[in-house]
Length: 96
Image (cartoon, rainbow, N blue to C red; front, side, top):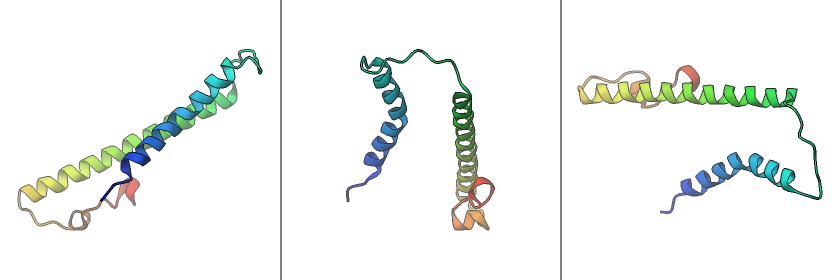
């Protein structure tokens, strides 16, 4: 069965690059010349939000990695799984 994951990944990559493409098109357009604007408050808010979301993503990835590492360690040592490990899914921290 064909998976939609490659399609979704390409759409996400396109959406990531889309703001930069729009800025490049507007700045290179001769029909709408705009003077270079200084760093504004909106730019600071956008940068802060970007860094916040990067931090949250890194924290979530780290929690998931630690959970899966511990789960597979317990499985390989033939320990009895309980709680979240028995369910197979992390249900604490950011995954509550």
